[in-house]
Length: 258
Length: 258
Image (cartoon, rainbow over all chains, first blue to last red; front, side, top):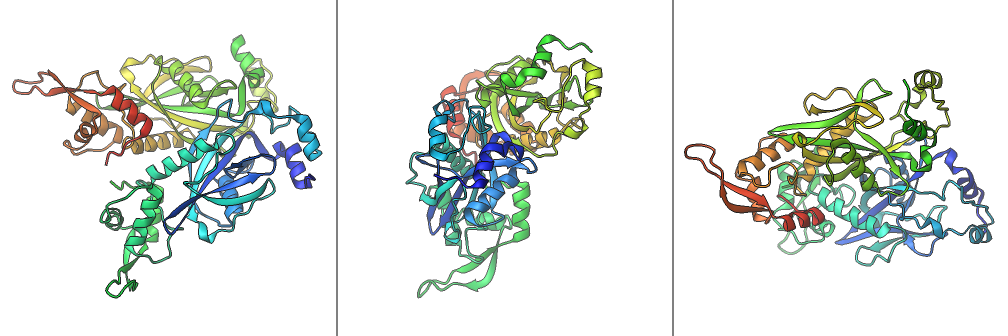
């Protein structure tokens, strides 16, 4: 395998531009028509799949590093992004399994025991949500593949990433009660049935049909439009849209959907 | 100022035992009789107050480092402890203000620009809650004072610790709806009015008296005991206690108080 110069430089001298010992990992959830998926990458130097992630530039805030990563993998800028947990366990990386000679034979790059990448790393988990049908997954220089997996068909992941997905999903479900979520996952105008399906799919459980959307309307997040959509001989439900100002305020201040 | 050998060794060679570039900071909240406080330390080498914190031993999980720190400062083991957010901004430490000569004159210890402590540090925030009347605050080797401050009378803190307190308080208030909290802050048996006061004080707002405790009872977290407490000529409310098994399960699984 021939590593390109960019990757070689990153491995040997990345610590000059990135903070050592700290990485970010991103659980990017994708929703479309009642399906919930998560974006995984197949790393060039690992057997299994894992969450996309990377290091933090010395000039970046954490959320900027995560945002850059999410944009690089999905092609979409400005997605909802939220820290969920930071992971740090001396055993999370299996560093003792690293084989200098095997690595050299594989890549032609000398990566010694004192290389900045071969040391304990704390990883900060972010989660994001988007409409997967609008994305074009990009592996980037570290991976050979990048693809959406249904939430019920995730393979066993590398490192502690199984736990990360579980925790990300848990936090996302708790935060659904405290942040407005939906902007990137529904068309600009949508029916109450559509936003109800979105919440049911994200929460992974049935909801009282009359409940969630009504609360969103009561909070001013949803506005009824004059338009209707004809979905049957006698069914033409009203279309709704998010109130952008109210939505952004709720993102900042939080809300209590209870 | 004469630094003791332990502190000198930590400054010069701490990176051998602790992970560089990563620290933890703990917002330890204290409750007692309708008062909410936060524990602050006055660092030996800083002018202002800040949250207690420290580094992570290379053999520790994050929560173990936080737990060690909380125990060292409060004298109490096994407190409720929860990550709330990780902070990393290139500007959060004011590293360019560090003056090698001033430091040497002050301490007699040569701390160069390449010292492991003089570089960007990401900090993982944990929050904890206890009954402040049961604690004996301990400054430890890095601080000259450690004391409880009322939540409404917190001075301007060092670094980004004002933001940390704000975020910790926000997360704690959100999580009150998802985790049972109270074990370390109420006597073993208590009245519904007492747990109601606890929730009101932690949330910083008035609650419908009939609401919160009833939900906790409905969830099986609170059990009525046969005992009553005489608090007036015609008032002897029943005492309640937490159901330990149910409480611990709710801590693991989360709950929805809504």
